[in-house]
Amino acid sequence: MTPEGERRADLAIQDGRIAGIGTIGDAAKVIDATGRLVLPGCVDLHTHLASTPTWTPLDDFERGTRAAIAGGVTTVVSMVYQEEGSLRRGIERGLRDASRSLADFAFHVVATDPSEAAMAELPALVREGHAGLKVFMVSPRYVERRDDYRALLRAAAEAGALVAVHAEDHAIVAARTAELHAAGRTSVLHFPESRPVEAEETAVREAVALATSTGAAMYLVHLSSRRALAALREGKRHARVFGETRPLYLYLTRERFSRPDAALWVGQPPLRDGEDVAAVWAALAEGTLDTVGTDHIPHPRAAKLAPGLSFDRIPPGVANLETLLPMLYSEGVRGGRLTITRMVEVLAAGPARVGGMYPRKGALALGSDGDVVVFDPDARRTIRATDMHSACDYDPYEGWEVTGWPETVLSRGEIVFERGKLAGPPGRGKLVPRAPYPA
Ligand SMILES: [Zn+2]
Image (spheres, rainbow, N blue to C red):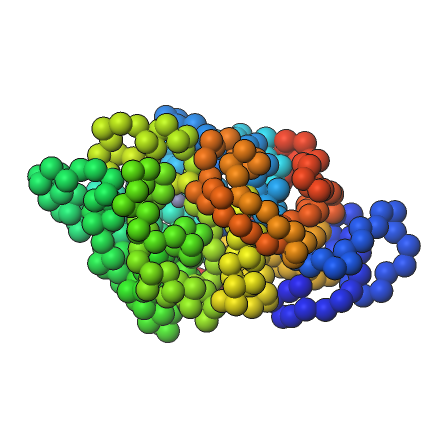
């Protein structure tokens, strides 16, 4: 199964790479995939598995990639943070953390200090395969140093680094948050009001304008609303901008925020309404959105539900690596919203292309890495946190009935997951050097 279509064939893997497609003769090991779908391993361009000097994720590279592999995600890109002014230090920390990874990996470095020194680091980092930056437009720092960030984007364009962007407008979010606090409306029920759709749309428009003026290739992460998607669709006509959504915006609406345990679904931006959900599906089907990334960053139930937390202090993010593929298959393909070739595009080929890893990753093609998911389209599962490989003690889709689940997963030709059991040792994952974008 590839974005080009479906065919019945044998797949031969030799020395970790796909060496033949068609009718294959003898092999040292044969996996019978009769009645199964054979998909390229998924590529998730958006995770938070690396630590920072002040924070260790609940799902680190080892835990997180156990969940990834069990869910058919064979390549993960993690955020790392600029450290003591240096982008390279952030990467170095990521590499240390990823030495426990079961999946292949790469990084985006979050630029928290867009200094001349940081810009000077870019060409060498890109040459070494670290061709990704991230900018949080929602942070106060972004507003204070807009000109420096613009210069950083120019430097990224010249060096060929993709710039991932968290697109929510700081001024709007800060003003709404202050108003709600002043009115004493600080419970989680008010979280969606604090980060309105206008904040996302405004930031997407600004990002598109920046992509045009600086020439940077930009990747707008976790888009959630029809207005933001309309801005992206328009921007794609003249700028190099790509769009990602994340699973939360496909399956859940802001109704969740009337529940007492609403904090369990807090992520930024917030869950939207039903029309937004429909627009996200449509944008995924038609190609306005290029990828689905998980933004995997779970926090324990107790941390999300800690008493007295105002809506802006709830740790944002959920677990999603293990359910990314099966839920998109079940709700999208079986649900009639997405063709299977489109699903393969947005989970594998698309993110590999946007991330500069195609066709080594994201493809079932001669010479590509032997990253393969043998997927049972009829397997029925009920999602339970207790069955998941994440360290998190709840799942955002607890109790959801899903049809279709990965049966066997190969990474560079090695069986790393088979019938419910992980096989690869921590540390088997390798860095995937990312190709630069032409200036
Ligand atoms: Zn994120």
